[in-house]
Length: 468
Image (tube, rainbow, N blue to C red; front, side):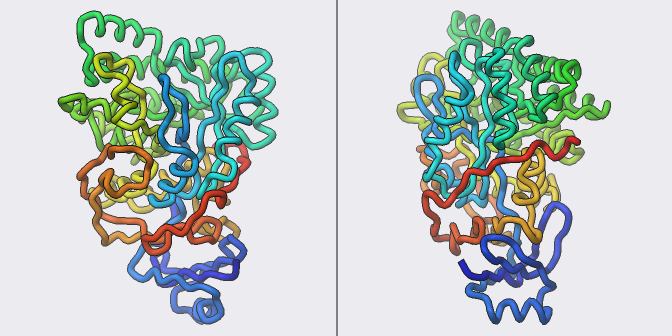
């Protein structure tokens, strides 16, 4: 592979901003040196490749800890494959994804994990890892959890939503939490009261309320908050840590804040769609609102301020995408006349780093907090740090050259996700990925794609690094 030097940029990590040059050898970061120092000049003279980052940010590759490539849902499949989805991730400055392997009811965890390995193996442009969705908690699958932790699948997702599909009752959730308390795994929770939501769905449809906007109304914010509270209490009983995914409601943030004020090992994630979109999008006419159907749902705009504050105060620690794209034509349209049949999910794996940089420009977060919530903390949370999520000697050379002075207009015409619409169509943002390295290999070269399917490797993860 030879040696690569990145010179002239502002290196930004969660901890520091430094004017430094970076030496890369054999796919890893070997050293950093002060810009224009004698040692840095000597590197550049002997390197096989020199990348000029003058005037640019040099940041760790993004870690998106919540994606769903090829996910079966509602009689169809997420439209991004591991090949198209990881290529789009690279274009957006994300160099590691953690996707969700799914256990089918009546099947083993092993068969679900093997199926996802088969989907991803040889297909990915960037590195990847897996969480495990538990759809059927029983004595056999509880025992299997221990073995998965040993092989680097160290987090398990449970659902309080979707009765008849992914749903687990409180007893099953408690048993899984007790098991994770013993084996070091981290329970991830989709916190919505699915039993109550189904009642409201039935009542809405019976009353003729079938448009996409009612998806948001029946998935009431209080039912997210109630489930979040219940999950926290179950985790306390089990003596287990808890990570609540895709937090969207101010009332749910309040539950997390209260738990963290008590010193509990409770963590929260939100997503760009909750920070930048709202129920106004769900209410768009002519069924356009279907493009924005996801769960948890988009909330009224006033919730956004509470999410931003949670990110600043560290009551929310991570921004992931919950990337789960379905095309408007032929997939979202399955719910014409019945919002409950609209496949739940939004595209976003390509947009996250840029939207969060816009949040820096807008004053919501600092540059270092941008890197913390998008790179370093997800890597630590899911046992990938310091191999991923930082720029330091010994880390994988997953590096993004980012141009803060560029502007771009987000559009389905120009994005690389395999979906026929953009959730952010027409939005102008400041900043753009210029060059991306994954383990020292150039994947995006000055806005040209240079990656390949099969470069990305499966990463066996350690346990959560916020516990110990």
